Length: 262
Image (cartoon, rainbow, N blue to C red; front, side, top):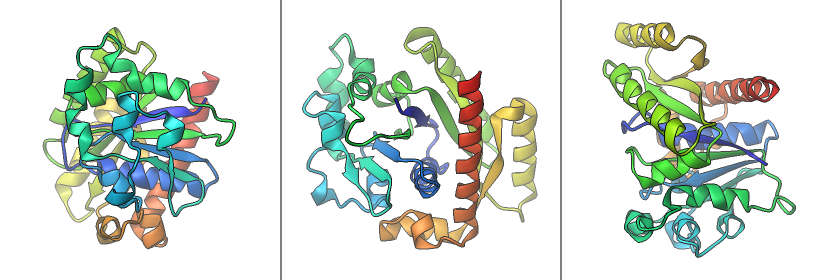
């Protein structure tokens, strides 16, 4: 079975989708087959991986409503070893459609468990969530082995983080007793900003080893890449953002080995 990591933060604008697609690309670059499941109705992860909206014939909406299997949603990207289950705006209505069903929080978990890896073995599944706590996010957390939290280096970061940690604890108590925090990745770091370094220090003091050593810098190439339908590693491999995501991928794999060994 693939390792399932949910990329989540209830606060928007923290680099969540950017982290999901670029970490997945970096994993594929070091020969780990990766699948991004786009659970955000905005579909930015799908767009950022070069999947045109007209080409999203089968989507995660179909997956959650029982209209398709995970295999049927998987779409190849321009990156060898990297795939995406794309999102459409139909996801906006999925909560209403499945809210009355007893297994409404476990739709994605069931779909992943039923996946047959014979034709396409997948090492990592990264789930990109909407920036809110709703039924889509709960499905992502119910299906996950762990949660990776992108955290912007800004003043209100710790406040949003404490809310998310409470959510994960609630999920652990109610729908997924095995879920853990995989790690916190600091994003949009500007070394010219003294406050940014203070935020990093505060988060490290608060969460210790749960914070990855890798810090994702604020980088114009990272911001530009989605408009070209490319992960930053395809857009500019040598920029600081690309190199940071490669380092993060190595750190994630190392931490995965430690978790499995434990």
